[in-house]
Length: 299
Ligand SMILES: C[S@@+](CC[C@H](N)C(=O)[O-])C[C@H]1O[C@@H](n2cnc3c(N)ncnc32)[C@H](O)[C@@H]1O
Picture (cartoon, rainbow, N blue to C red):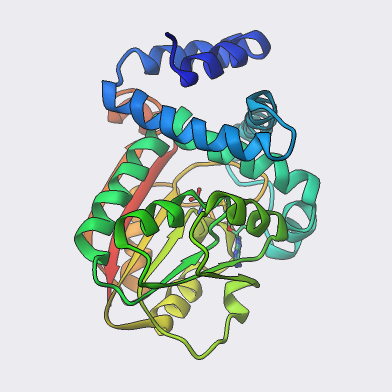
């Protein structure tokens, strides 16, 4: 029996053989646990799609559309050395307010959590961090939850007695997250995090791949600092050199992320990072291969 993830890669191969070649190479190096986890995820995702009269083919098409966008943005980035969008207003107009764009983007990003090995590694690191730092948290906030996979995994680990809030600027992201999260007691806020004012504070905040979406990431971290209870923890992820249709703030290397976190008044308690390509560090730095940074921060 072939695993569902192998079937997905075969489908990708029919439409984008070059990209599938890279995915197949990566699949040769994974352990049995990866196949079991991706199978459980894809079974859940498939039933979500079935409830909308769609199949996994739909997810594959969304993923390939996202890859096409990434490739286009990468060519421009290699030419100019900067991201193509420079302001939040531009990205809001181009991406967040366009349901047809957000729809394929979030489905694509959801599949990438298992197809990109650095996304998968960071997802596993997140789960370890939740087990270490978030057990017993009474209040939990996710900022920019997107597809909803992270909060869904956090609820499975922390349990149902915690109060969960999710804020996202995109209505499409909230709609997909609602379908991904089976737990009923999650409050959804369709808002910009900078305008999020509900008089609440949190024991644990998660913000995956949002820091690079704002013009002033220091102000964003400081805003989250105000939302944390004393002793609370913040889990963030953010990439270097990752041209995308909605990225504004360019981190050129890991040190720039670390310095910005310190400037915002946080200490890094634990961190993990991984390059998007399986190449030696010198090669990754020379060719501006994206690195995904994940960290647990405290004030
Ligand atoms: C790249 S996705 C990340 C999804 C998920 N957290 C992950 O790590 O895969 C970014 C998400 O952040 C949301 N977002 C971007 N800027 C935001 C803001 N200022 N306030 C709230 N949500 C925001 C977007 O709508 C999108 O759903």
